[in-house]
Length: 312
Image (tube, rainbow, N blue to C red; front, side, top):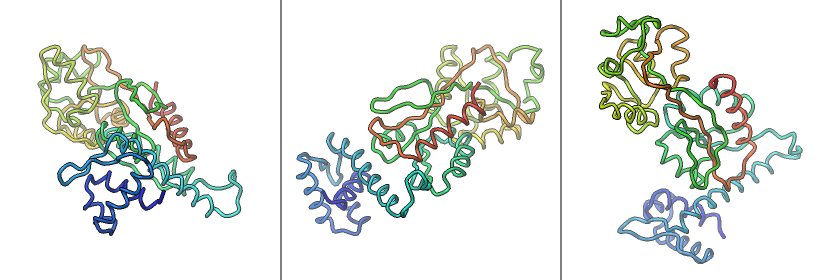
């Protein structure tokens, strides 16, 4: 089995098109077709179905994506090990690549400090962070184009994936340090809870629709025949907190996103009659994944960070 055929297979799988893959790789389309046919002959199965001008992975092709990436990663690890010279494994600095995926709201608030500590421990490791929607990242884990997937949502088990880290985080309402119009009588914590009917009338800045905790908020409000309208939608929670600090409106975010602003007094938590809503910080990787040294270090750093800085 030739490595170039595996590389070609992954490029066709990524672009879903033989001619586009040929262009990216500098081959003729016929050469790409020949390489894929050679690979299919060696594996004894069809990897792609031609649909119009595109190419769709078969079930066997979907399974092979993971293993193809693993083969290339293993080869890279072997090359890095040989280039490490005559040092013993226990003495060699960790090298290679770490590929982490996360939804934007989590990566903005949590990943910077975790990545800085990881880089301090493993300065020779190249770190690649990919932010996208949850379902996209799950498929990238299954295809082995990501090593780890960090998310915040309800407890969830996904077929073929291992969950490594699990911590509870409260999702809260926040408002500017100075009350918005209509909130003056609720400034003091001792003056009671803000009724939901009043809360939903406020201007809101929220993460995009489909975000786990926004979806849950909309579901809870719908049960009471209420809805919240967002005057601004953006995935970056740091920007959301700044907008609330500036007086734009209220928001609904994980506590860790607003913690520093709350401590400074530039935003305040809003209490309502809703029961506290919690989500879970979870880390996933593929069940067949070889846990690289850099993955082990990252998991340990993240676990320590959550215990010391985020979780109750």
